Length: 170
Image (cartoon, rainbow, N blue to C red; front, side):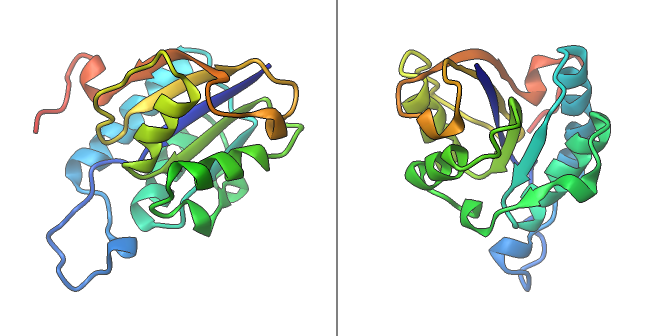
């Protein structure tokens, strides 16, 4: 069995009109929420074997902050350019190509792709929203990442920053 955690990047800053979308940074809320979500994952016993992220600054920063909170070395994070604004079919292709030695993997990306991917992998999920820093923990009844297909996942947990005391507002 494999465990996949799909994570949307933290809240980003739109106050720098000169920056490209790819280079947008996290805003104060994103910087505050990432360590809280890492703590929630740690309390839930999540120990990643692999972390993969979009190359966008906001996603890579979120991945690095979550990795730090989980004791995972930032140098080991794999940056995948194809995850930047990826549609579900691209996210599925990335998941199918993950290292077989990894059983628990966190993948950081963007909406609407992450939201749509959760609903396609987990037909019963029916998630209506996938806010910033949402984390979908999905159990996959497969032995190999290459066997992952639409409908093969079971949504085990759905976390958002609002799930915890001291929630973010806005």
